[in-house]
Image (tube, rainbow, N blue to C red):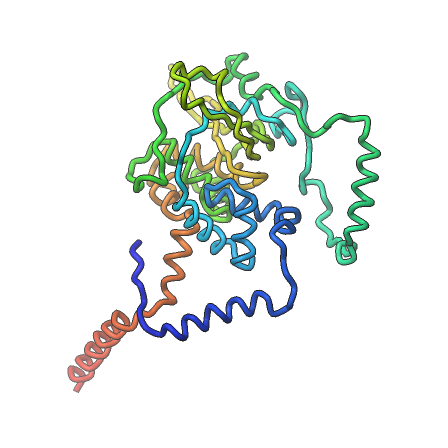
Length: 371
């Protein structure tokens, strides 16, 4: 999509920007960035995921600057990301090394290592909590103090490392195929224009940075009948992944000399999706495939929907829009889609007048013909 700069009306544009600042601060209340980071985890995680930039600080700043407009916040952060140098590439991350805060399976009640509910809204009553209207820093500190006393005998009940993957347990029982590792260099969708057909590495990148609502909606459409996909969540994990980079001066590329540079929180989902195949006797039988989803922060609905679309796009076909990679991948990008829709607000004087003149000529010609 090409964007055309609009010239003229400089004073009006500058005043419009000043008015924007006025609308943001006219209440004389200042929304601190640290308050956004502390109290709006879901929004911060969503902006980081759709922007492909892991920085809670910058995501919160973008949210403040855009007054909570998610599309604008993502646009701001992506624009900033494009100016940053890429000095290093991290080592490949093995997600089974995740420091797990939440881990559940909808496929099995008992899984190796156990289920960890962690922090989730899944079991809340969805009733408005009016006590939050009178919440103060003193009441928060009092609650935290009480919570610490109740859990002082537990080192850290919410974090575990090296938990086995559920799918690995099933592979040992020969219920899922074991594939050879594919070390093909992934294509970077931020450095090259997308070309069809795409590789799986490209699809996963576009899905993970896709607009959360769009990915969720299309994943739901796939379940609802456009492709008749109905998965079961084999395993959902939320936790921290450690990041390391190789020593630039180490010619041996020994991982023991790697530098630890930090960690990121992610949500990872492996969905088990039944498919019908024909065996050697030409009889129909059921097998399972795995759909994969991963995204920054705790964004479980998006990760599940991503895993559904991942499997659907692996079997790309034009019969269903949810299996059509061109349809899915070109329409879930928040910056691309919101930018195209928003550009309709810009002047289209010439093109519209041309269309209007064409309509007038046709009508005038029709009137003459009737006479």
